[in-house]
Image (cartoon, rainbow, N blue to C red; front, side):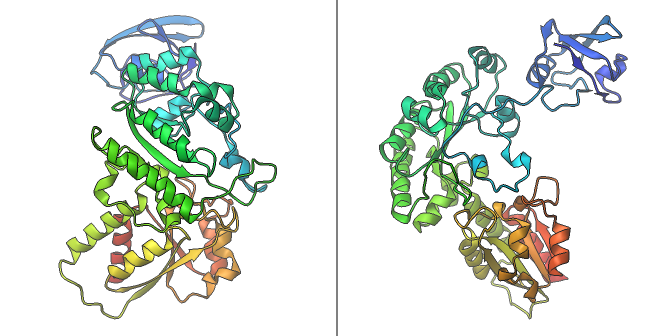
Length: 441
């Protein structure tokens, strides 16, 4: 394949060789380059034979460089190719439950193992050919993040509405036998892949340890926009407790021969069940934090660590200089309220306000899916608050931008409320620093 070079880093190996934007990359060390994975893999060697084309004329460039020293080429696309789409119609697919007004990017259905390797996104592997599976092994693409949901082949095929979904254990076994590691997740739907099906899934996956690194168990997310979707319902308190019970049983079993408990219920399961979260030491290295596993406990751990370092003795609380209104979802609200009440930061008065999600529906209760609509909703009376500032978590916004999921901006919402909105980076340390800074103003 030919790849048009769109940029050459100044002072790089390629720049010194005279390669220019507009040239085409043909091969590295005699290998055709399919995508960024091939490019990074073959360019990591010290001795490089680089074949390029300019105006139809081929040129070979031979160089010796530092191992893993980048060649300094840019191709305009992160993957040097298009993104591979999902081939499934999962009965619990969140993209099928978006509001009609949602922007198109919220309904993107990528299922690309290269993104899994590079960004930690989860894939189902149903669109993998045998050749691509072999290429994963040949390129040592590890660790991957794989949505398993169930290891029962018939049940997985029904869940994903794809007959190839039943190949999952063959695929995972092949990866494990060839030294490829992977994290896994199971989105659990009550009455479908919980109970005995969940037990089988945990058993089958932990048997692939140490190449199977972890398993997150996540409750199905359901919005109010489910017209025409498969009939599903949220977990109730007792059902959530049963899921946690199964996971705790297997955590004890796995702890006997794995380095950690292996299987991790998402924080949301504990909140639904009304049960205390596991202790900080029971989350391993927080490898499933993006799945909502250990997020609240890590927030607490970081916050308390900063607090105790700053205030080794209980601080005297002078009259507050600043009042802050922290906006969050129904799920985390009580936990954050309790944390801040037990660890008051001098100089600040904090109110935690839990908002009902009107955009996706009341069953969606995480802070990251709140939108500008909820902040502007007159029923929430944020404009009437006497707080100096309204604080939101950065997880409510598009990464690197100030845009909510409903396309409203922080500036627009701030102007309508007549209140300054401050975006707080995720994590307990950032929250503590922000409160300490506000109290010192």
